[in-house]
Image (cartoon, rainbow, N blue to C red):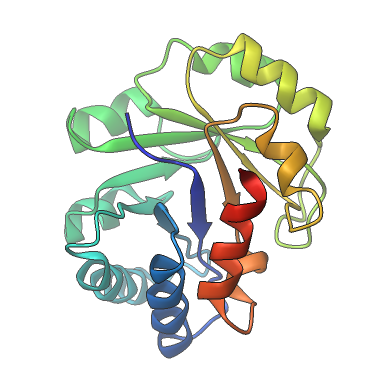
Length: 204
């Protein structure tokens, strides 16, 4: 069982120097998992950033998850991959990465949540809990009640993402979700270390 508790998703608009600073600080503050997200399509840049993060996280016990791209994950021997609904099918991704890597999948509604229960994935990312500026194509916001219901019905661990901050993180944690994924609340904090510590404290 992996520790999804405080799951950092990187901001693809931050340059490599900023990214390194955020990761170092966030890990020192208690982040338990890091997902590298790149949406700009430059695979060489994605691999370069992934290699930097892989060496930064080496020996920390914090897994590196690659968003969307199985090829990038394999290229840098990352700890896992997180897929969206329009990415490679989970069964195929599992065959490529093997059984010892972490595989996550985003689910955006109840039908997807139900269908995902039989897939060879380790966890599900419930997206989005609240509407958020980092995800402009949200069609369905789960809300606290939707998340709480999903936690009860899912046999897979759920990681909540989308619009979560210091003001609502306690209510999210109280649903029993396995983890909470954050972008802005950590990446844009003056001290990502202090932000991570404070968010973890609020979740207890």
